[in-house]
Length: 288
Image (cartoon, rainbow, N blue to C red; front, side, top):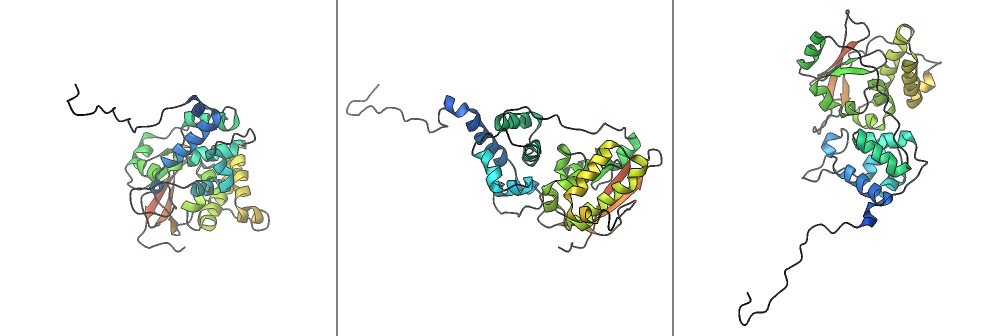
């Protein structure tokens, strides 16, 4: 009913989301929308090594994602501009999926939209059984702890290790992650000398006893990704059985300052193919 002397006004339009058009469902538009959305859902506080910011907006920029992927801003930005390219390499798309923390379904959609093909199957190491007692030890340790094979495959870990190393959700080989992934260089202080080179030396020492084709693949990939290891492979060979107890620094999610740790390595007499690795936080601050 309209009161006398008043004028009927049409109902105001809702200011909700705009209507979806079929044009927005094309491959290019979907690639643009999804890659941007995946990036914006990242919380920079969970990406170790990124500069911390105050306030509620904790987004990760395109430039930061490109740096973690190990490509130029122009190359990564092509995805967020919806540029479809069958020439995108598996290595590039896998790195983008890892940095954006995509699950297996999202990863396959990225491949299909960006390159017009299905994702290559993820290569997971065969599972090794971990004794229940060992699992209880790492679960109750209170510090980041995991079980690792001579080739670097992580076969069991505790909640603290998952919190400190989110990459365990997509990369289960610690040697490959440390040496090959650009994000490791952001997270680990003195990346080459304190982390990458000692890990390579450990795998090299274990190769005569436990050598297999997958182990050789990991070692070759790691050496080729670390300049000092590649340059010194023949001239200054380095072999170590255990990581030494020198203080090592790294960035941890949700902590602004780096943490100094001592790496503790324990052999298991009942299963010589597995070692328990623990990171014990120290009091002193790391040197840059």
